[in-house]
Image 1: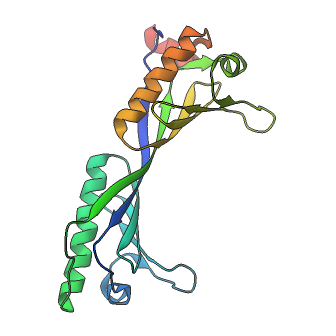
Image 2: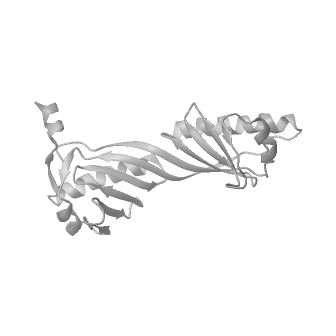
Image 3: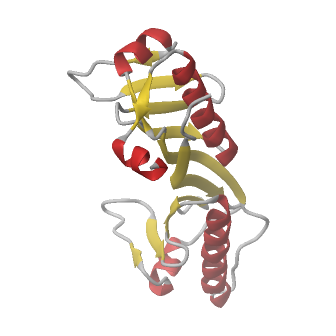
Length: 199
């Protein structure tokens, strides 16, 4: 097993929220706080929340894209606040949000760290479904099949993980790649700052 335990941190969750009905975004536009609406440039209202920090793109069709949260709990809280705000404004004009919104996570982006240097040339040889062209991009691109995620792995041991639909997939991918690289002898050893922690 690798001598250092890999870690990860969710940086951004992208989700779609679908309401069962259209939204009159012209009404929203009159009362929504922290928003941008320039229909000639973009068809939706861009609505920003401070707590939790999130951005919602709200469309007439009742579809929304919510980005910026760093956990599933934050995403759920953000969606509740967005729906509540929209509902309050629509109720003033005799409407309101009907039915239960459907929330689907489209993509989780996370940063990972193996806490050790990686021999990317060797890794490119051993790992399936990967691409490594250092003159074009400094990282190795690995398409994992289970879970279905894409990992960008750098020689520092730092990684970017995209494509996960739930946090458990990020954790599984990070642990799996750490194990595979260790087994293939691609881990060169802990970075200097990691060594200092052991001393």
